[in-house]
Length: 450
Image 1 (cartoon, rainbow, N blue to C red):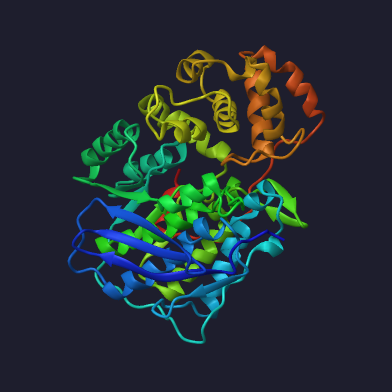
Image 2: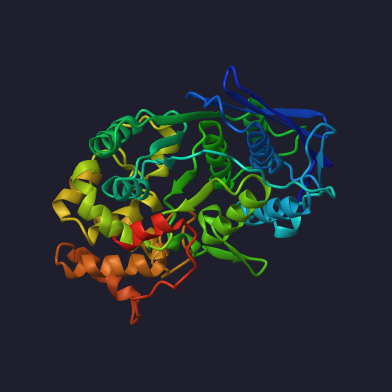
C-alpha cells in the first residue's frame, strides 16, 4: 500500500472564463494543499457555441486532468466539493477504469499495485447528453510525428478541410504545420491552426521535487491522450465543429507487460478499448453530435510507415519528430529532432529502414542506429527478444522484427546479421483482426480507398 500523507483527493469546481479564454481546474489534498491547472485558448470562440455542452465537457476534463495530482500521494478516497457536479455511476465507472488502466506503467515505475488506485464515488442522477445544432468541420491534432502527418496528408488528398490543433507551444512544429496548411489551402481553401497552452500547477512540480513533510511524492506516466481527448471535445464545442480526427493505429492495442496478472499498456489511452469507451462517454454524457475517432485505427504501424515513406517523406523528412527524449529535455526547442539513444528513435529508424534508402535515412537521423552497439539491447526489447517492450509509443514486436528483416534483406545493413540470428525461427507476418468501424462512414470510405 502507498504511504500516503493524505486521506482524500478533492475535485473543486472548474472555471471557464470566456473573455480571457482561460480554463482553470482546481484540486485539493485534504483541503491542505491546493492545485490549479490552467489552459490558455489561443483562438477565437464561436459566439453560438453550446454552453451546456461546454459545461459537461469542462467537468469531464477536470476529472481526466485530476490524475496528474491524484497520483502524487494516491489518497484512499476521491471526493467532490459541494459546488462540483459529481459524476453519476456510468461516469464514475469510466474514470475508475481510466485511472487504473492509464496508471499501469506508473504503478510499475513506483512498485505499486492496481489495488492502490482508488475508485470514483458517484451520485445517483442522470447526466444525459444534449443536442448541438448546426456544427460542422474537422480538427486534426498534430503531435509532430509521422502518424498525424499521414492523417493530414490522407485528408488533404481526399479534399477534406480541417484545422490543425496542438496543445503546447513548440517552435519546431511551426515549419511542419505551415507546410500542412500550404497543401490544404491549395485544395480546400483557408484553414487555421488552433493552439491551447497547458500550465501544470507549480505546486505539483514542487511536490515532485521535494515531497511533503519527508514523504516522497510519486511521479510517472499518466494517460495524457485521455486529457487531450477531452480537450479536443472542448475545442469542437467552442468552435462549433463536429469531428476530432486522431491518428492512433491498431498497433497501440498491444501492451508492454503485465502487473497483478493484468495487461499494462503505455498506450492505453490511444488503444481501441479507450477510443470505444470515450466515444460512448461522449454520446451518453456530452453530445452525440460531436465525434472522436482515429482515421488510422484500421492500420498497423507498418502500413502507416509505408504510406508515410511514399507520400510524406520528401516533404516532411526534416520537420517530423518522434523523439520524446529530445522533446522533454529541450521543451521542443532542439537543434536535432533525434537523440538516437532512446527506444522511440530506435523504433522509428527501424521501421523506416525497411522503406527509405539508407543514405537518405542517415542524413535525417545523423547516424546509423543499427551500428551503435549500445542500442542492441533496445532493439531486442522492441523485437520481443528480451525483457519487455519499452514504455514508449511504438509498434508491435512483430512489426519491428519484420522491418529489421526487410532492412537486412535489402543488403544495406549487413551489421544486422547477429540481431537477425537472435530472432530464431519465427513467423513474422500477422494479419490485423477485423474490427467494427469507429468512424463515420465518409471517413471509413476514405481510409478504405488508400
